[in-house]
Length: 506
Image (cartoon, rainbow, N blue to C red):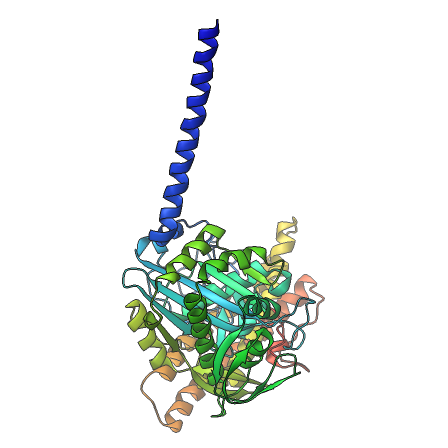
C-alpha cells in the first residue's frame, strides 16, 4: 500500500512539474516574442474596428420609369458629397498589418480635455493633436506624420464637412471615445492613401502632464517663449527643465514666431522625439506599459498591455536617428466664421509615396475653390436633397406601416423621386469633375468661373424641379412638417441638413 501511495505522489509531483515546465516554456517564449518579435503581437485583427457604412441615397419604393435602366429596389446609390469621402483612397482596400509584413501604423491623439470634462475648445473637447506613427520593422525605421488639425475634410459614413479635429466629436467624442477614435483613424486612413491604421492611443491634457512628471520632466531647448498650461509661469527662449505643465503649455502654443499654425505640429513632433530620447537614455521606455496601465483615466487605447510592452521594448533598440518627422501642412483660409487648413496636396502625395510606396490621388474636396463652390451652389443642392429625402422617407415609413397609395400619389412619388435622383447624380458628377479641375492644372479665374457658371445653371433648374415635385407629393400624402429649402438663421455647419453632426469647431 505504501509503495502504491509513493507511486501516486510521484505521479502527482511529476504532473505538477510538467505543468510548471510547460508554463515556464510558454512564458519564456512570450517574453522572447516581446523582445525579439514585436510585430508578432499585431498579426491579429480583433482590434481593427469596421468603419461605419457610408450613408446612402434612398432607394425607390415603386417602379420608376426613367430613360436609364431602373435600379433594383434592393440596391442603393452612393450619397452625394455631404457624405462622399475624400478621393485619396486607392482602388484597393486598406492593407491589414498581416498582409504587409514588417509594417504597423498607430495613430496618437491628444485630446483637448481635462479630468473634469472641461475643455479649451468651446463646448466640446477635440483631438487637437494627431500624429500617425508608421513603424517599418524590416527597415528598423519610424516615421512621425502630423495631420493638420484644421484640415477641411469629410468623415466616413457621415454627412457634412468638418475640421479634422472635430471628426472625433462626429464619431461620439467624450460620450463615446471608442467611436470617436475609430472615426479619426478611419479618416486618417483616407488621408494617407488608404493605408491601414488599426491601432490608436489617445491622451487628454492631464494624462500628458502626469506622464511627463512621472518620468522627471524634460530638459529642452525652448525656441519660443510661452506660458505654462496653468498660466502660472512664463518660460523664455533657451535650454531649461520643463515639467508636465510646461510641456503641455509648449506644445499648445498656437502659432510660431513665423505666425503660422503649422509650427505647432512641428513643436509637437520635436517634443515627441525629445521625450523618446529621455526615455531611452534613462532606460525608462520599459516603464511606459506600467504608466498606461496604472493611469486611472485620461489614456485610451485599443491595444493590449502585451502589445504596448512589445512596442516599448522595440523602441529600446531603435536609434534616435531612425525616427523621421513629417507634416502635410497647408494654407489656412477663412471660410465664413472658421479658418480651415487646405492641405498641400503635392507634399501630401510625396510623403505617402516616400513612406508607404503608394501613389495617392489628390483629395479633391479639400481645396479652397471647392469650399467656395459649396457656399455658392453646393449647400443649396444638399439642402434640397435633404428636404426631398424627408418626404420620400415619410412615404417609406407609411408604406412599411401598411398604408396604401392611389395611382395619383404613386405618380407624384415617381416625379419627386426622379427629380431627387437626378439632382443626386448631378451633385456627384459636379463634385467629381469640379474637384478634378480644382486639383488639376491651374486655370485662369475666368476659366474657372465659366465652368462653374454652366454647372450652376443646371443646379438651379434641377433644384426648382425637386422643390415643386416634392411639395406636390408632400401635400398629397399629408406631410405636415415644414420644408426648409434654404439655410435659415444659421451657418451651414449648424444646419443638420448639411452637417449630420453639429460640432463646435472652437
